[in-house]
Length: 257
Figure 1 (cartoon, helix red, strand yellow):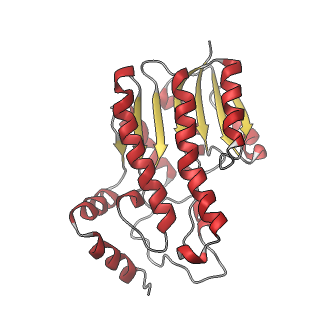
Figure 2 (tube, rainbow, N blue to C red):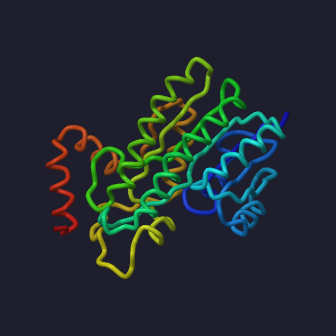
């Protein structure tokens, strides 16, 4: 039985950083890297520390879950690590974003996380780990980044509760909550033909910082991983202050009407 790691969203950003630093998590017979862009995955496979299988899937499409389930049934691997890093956001008024884009965001950011977790757990043993990428955005309602923030709130709460459910099986689930992080995420989230929603970034972290912290927190069995004083301070204030105040502050900070 092969011991494997599965990483979604592996073609860029945080997912790619996890893949490239996978030795931090242990040794694997094979790594399955999943994303839409097969060329990026094949390029990644050439630089991986373990034998790597590129799997081109669009996880916003439900048919991809059947493909993944069939592959698991055929291979019957021991999944020692699952990282759900696929996802995207849009910085725009909710009603000005095409409805199919908002629904696609929910499909990828939420449904795919649930599906991959549920399909993978039967192939996990004691000591396995799941890392789901949530966000600092999960801690507050965010006008103009509304749907994205709401999906990440789902991922955060889903992950924390699933961690408790799987505790009896010796499987840990960690919600990784990055703040602003310098990745290709912004290429899709920002509409260059419209006024920029985010005019001020109070901090900008790197994928290396986020992932390094996540590896440390995973080994400690933490439910939530968050890097940076600014990120921790903002989430603490979002918990303590009325959300109406938090939203007003955000709107004023970004000069949004």
